[in-house]
Length: 209
Image (tube, rainbow, N blue to C red; front, side, top):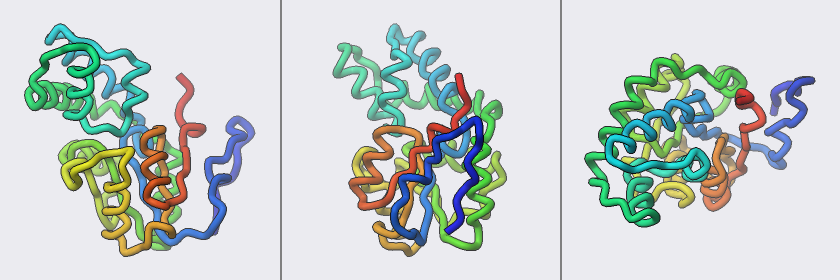
């Protein structure tokens, strides 16, 4: 299998974690294909501020990959908020959608998608809602490269449970143990391990903030 060339400015090779051959690739979306996480955080801050609530940046990144409605439930439980889960989630996603056009690609990851297209079946597996995940993939002009797009609406349990990745593997027709998962969050990487897949932490490729 070919691997991306190391860069002098990026000495850590995420693919160094791969120790056995693979037959399929599964990509997270937010923070992996596109640098959307800062935009998500802005949407969270604005949506919560109008509801007399807040989320720290650290907690936001700790919960990366968790569905929006579950994050609101967590905030209610931890901080005693009484946010309406569905209403607050819809407001946050509406604010995020207004910002989505600003999201740049994670170029090293998108280059991999193009490199492996036609050689391995590939899927997107995201804890986001389908409408926004599809819109992001379309904005990156990657729709044709993926056999399947799986989102939080397709499973009952989100990351770090393995359900989303197992569904993606099923839809591309590759056994879980023969898949690699490209992720940018601890919860996503844990979900990949629980699914029996090889996790690839792409955070060394993210823009420096």
